[in-house]
Image 1 (tube, rainbow, N blue to C red):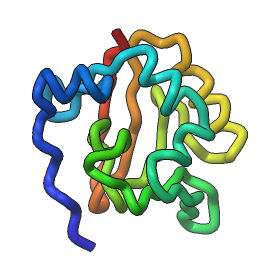
Image 2 (tube, rainbow, N blue to C red):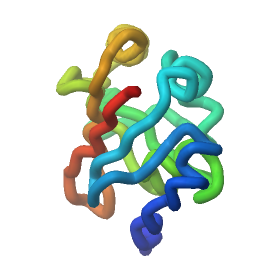
Image 3 (tube, rainbow, N blue to C red):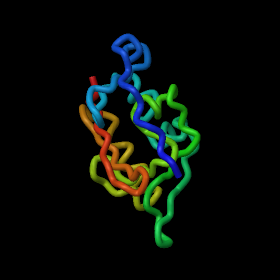
Length: 130
């Protein structure tokens, strides 16, 4: 499976309009309103594209993303189809309950990170909340 190239950094105008701006290779800033509206809950994750539980060796180990639109919130946050979301702020997404708790933890956060596996390699995407 071929991974899409990394999204181009958003222009400051586009970043203001969407509430998300890429500030580095794996670094982004987003508005508190965007966080609250889109990813401040596990239900918000479902708006990012198709999100299905991911099993590895028979155990729940995260969520696989597909049908991620580059122009949608997930694409602007640096996520791509095929990514497997494995951690939120270092907390393993090893059960639906753990995922719910992990996503709840970012609601009031000023910074948070998603651990993902992309093309078999782990990486981290981090976000400053303004």
